[in-house]
Image (tube, rainbow, N blue to C red):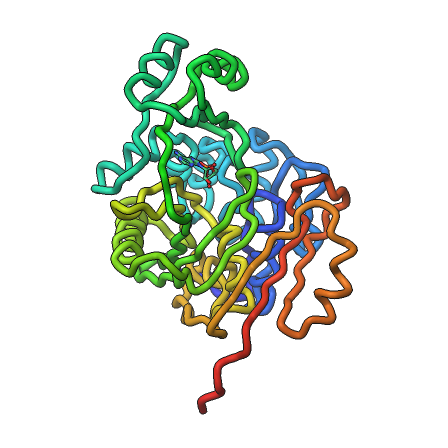
Length: 361
Ligand code: AMP
């Protein structure tokens, strides 16, 4: 069951998460084979092998699998059928069940509710009449979202007035939608849990997240202001999600902190942007932890390495900031090597560690 160092880890998806996974696999002696269809694959630049092919291309998938000892994914919109097909050839961790839940906001909410978790009030929407009725029931404001393929605030429209409903419905394509009641939250946080093949779990300190325009802007550790009871309830729910899915790897769930306790927002069956601080800020990064988990190795310690840690995303063209960041001894700059700095695009991140805690031998 253990995939020992020297073996090859296949990664579906070629973005920055794959790049940081490959960078974490290297010191453990693993080789990485990236599989993705895009022309620009920043993960492939730091991987031993790369296959650029469609997720539906069975011949290429089979050839890819024949070179891998274990396969994982860094992108949650990989078709579930692709993962199910690869599972017939090689171990894929986490498996396609996690994708089936995470790819559909409706399935995800039902799954979490069945485990006793709280979600935003919601209604499945397949027609304009259903949307009108749902708006009556859930009230305004509300957020209309596509059930599938949304990310970073894309695929969702906030509705503040009844006369905005028709345009929102048309903008999102009219079917396969979900209407969510607006959650009046004090803060947003995420819980990152790693689960090993033996079911052993390790969870990082919760991350306090601030979004701008639907995109993560900043993560703070510790998550000041989130009551311990909320942290405990949210963590217990994520552990339940992981257990129910027989999950192997790093799993992230995002929550709203409200007066009535934590409200589950969404899950990512993968390493997560809000966990980038763990590269320097935790004794085992989320990327190394994921590699350890999918390879069946023991999980590493998750203790923070500094009393205060801040991660800021570098979106769009931030070249002017790089010299100052590099000159700052508390800052750790990560650039993903993407060629085009489109406004709002995640080009890198920087993690600031406050003074290191006193060394104890
Ligand atoms: P999502 O893609 O669902 O994570 O949404 C992106 C961001 O929009 C979230 O991080 C929240 O800041 C906001 N948001 C999403 N859904 C809701 C909701 N039901 N109520 C309030 N804010 C929301």
